[in-house]
Amino acid sequence: MAKQVVTRTYRARICNYSQVRNDLDSLGFAASKLWNVGRWTAQRVWDACGQIPDANALMAYLKNHERYADLHSQSSQRVLQELGEAFTSWYGKRRNGDENANPPGYRKHNDDHPRSTITFKAAGFKHDTHNNRVRLSKGKNLKEDWSDFVLCEYDAIGPSGRTIENVQQVRAVYEHGIWRLHFVCRVSIGEAESPGDGMAGIDLGICNLATISYGDESVLYPGGALKEDEYYFAKKRAETDDSASREARRLDTKRTDRRTHFLHALSKDIVSECVKRGVGTIVVGDLGGIREDENGDARNWGKHGNLDLHGWAFDRFTSMLEYKAEERGIAVVTKSERNTSKTCSACGRSDGRQRVQRGLYVCECGLVANADSNGAENIRQKVLPNLASDGGDRDNGWLAQPAVRLFDCSEGRFAPREQVVNREP
Image 1 (cartoon, rainbow, N blue to C red):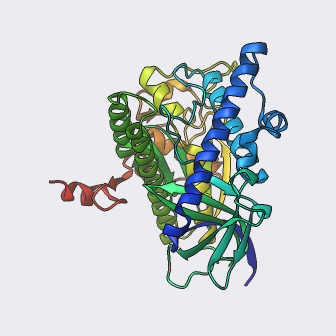
Image 2 (image 1 turned 30 degrees about the vertical axis):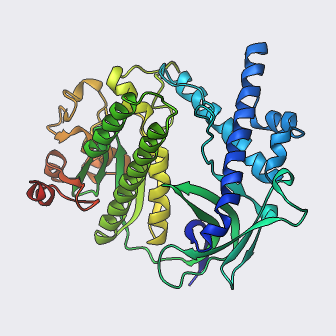
Image 3 (image 1 turned 180 degrees about the horizontal axis):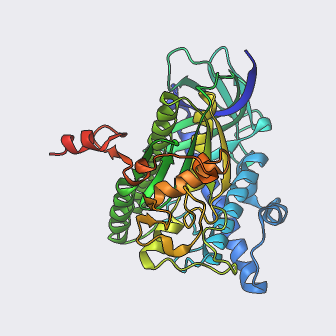
């Protein structure tokens, strides 16, 4: 069976935690301080010339700064790269009309610095696979002598007997009050056999986070549970006295964890359902440019719509779907979503007036369908044309009555709507 090389991240507990905790704390604080130096420098340049220096400029400017030498050079570079990425993300949100987006802030609360993630690239660590040990480099300012380092003994989190090999990066991450190690590895896996020749189309949205058309059946995945979480944590965060307080950071971490779990559960359920139906190819709508109108200007979706749109993690969901599908032998391709919400999937007629309500699509040819199901079928037809539009005969009743799978908060997974409703108190 053919092999393919993929990237995977494995988490691990630190066995000698009491011996290395203080050293990891020092490195985490140092990363926060370097971030703050970079943020302060970017502010000075911004005030002077109205531009934000990119990561390469910051690295060149701060290379001889005292805080830069607190970490291994590659670890310091990564901190400033993260700062540059944060500014780029902020640019994008402002350019797309999100007036509430704020530039990246300082990592400091009064005199306290949070423990930031430290990334160790190839030259910054040495990995002992046989003894489950990894040696992490310190910056010269934090070394007691030239050979000083942090030696962590670890136990992989996951299936028993997992061996961590071919490590490309090591990240020390402060999770819920304790340090963990994240190993980024190159892994060879057997190329799985495709479940079949079927094809599914996925339309991504806000109310229905994902709608899938299998060609003879449509399934909706509402995003209500995710939206409830977003509104709840936004409200709780607004109640904190300081946006940089420990409680605010705790809420941010919890919100991120819940969102990540939701997207993992969604992508896992979609792949599992595709395997059952013999789907070998998933076509996902490409949402590039969704935040702009035809003239390239920021699209206004209304107050709540803009908040939902700018918090939309479709890129992250697509990447999760891709690697989960890859392991089951399913190919994932992206196709433009342009006009898929306006076009009839049965006859091909395109008219914006045919979408008479938010969730209802009615065409002159007689098709009455759920609007998201119609869009998902159009995306599927980007790769596999519909015979009905070529004069064939097909029953489209399933487009009007899609099945629904809801996120079951008590189980942490998706299930048919009738099962989730029955479990509610």
